Length: 354
Ligand code: AMP
Ligand code: MG
Image (cartoon, helix red, strand yellow):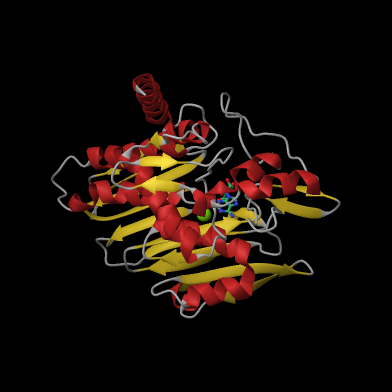
């Protein structure tokens, strides 16, 4: 346990150094509304943080560093395919009768994952990890290299399906001891980015007027812009992800997350197989192009976006319309044309459409 902690802290220092070297930071102290904004590479994606300080006289660079540090911490703890992460160690403990004691952060993340699992009737299920690996959507635990895509046979899928059942994972919230059934593995990739964005906001929110944390399109928004304008969030065009498709105008604390079929996929016989797996069938969820969820926080938005991708338009919108303060915008494709589906009130957020 001690040596694992040492490895983890060494990994954190290295990640911090790399992040410090590559992030570009703009501090605009002379502007009418001073802010600090920067971009880094973390959690396998681009991270953008913008902070408007409460007190413009302060040296607010350290708020930026604190927010970035929170994201680094989640990345070090919650990566399923990095042998130095805590989640990797938890996965190695599967079948261990005395369980495995996790940190407060991982326990909190697992509790939030369980909430989304229950809310979505298991459409969001982190124990799909063995299937994620079977299709080659995982990464090498030592080098971080992406695996080769592979289409498992029905027999291979049938052999893995009994391992998919997050309801069988036991967590003693008081002691932090987690009991993972034999051969089960967890992948928190569908919720960790949203969780990291929320954590980054909560670590500094006491001293900022407003901030936005964007981790590869999973976004947490806290507070207000000093110019009184809404926060503008761009949703990517699913077929040309570098272009903006829709702009949302946000005026309250919330989280926004998008799951898309363009993020990781392979094609076989003209069919696109994406990285979101239906825990019931063991097959990649099909028929959806992108799902954007706006929720009270980014953790919930991230988990729900993945789940709605699995549930499909009808069941997905039924679930969203029954949740307070949650909206969704879904795109499907018919004959090469994108079709939009909105939950109640979702259109209220749209300020610009392509
Ligand atoms: P996201 O981009 O947030 O939708 O997360 C997608 C990632 O979550 C995938 O790359 C897998 O690692 C993992 N995943 C795939 N299917 C599921 C599922 N049904 N429930 C939870 N996590 C999943
Ligand atoms: Mg997600």
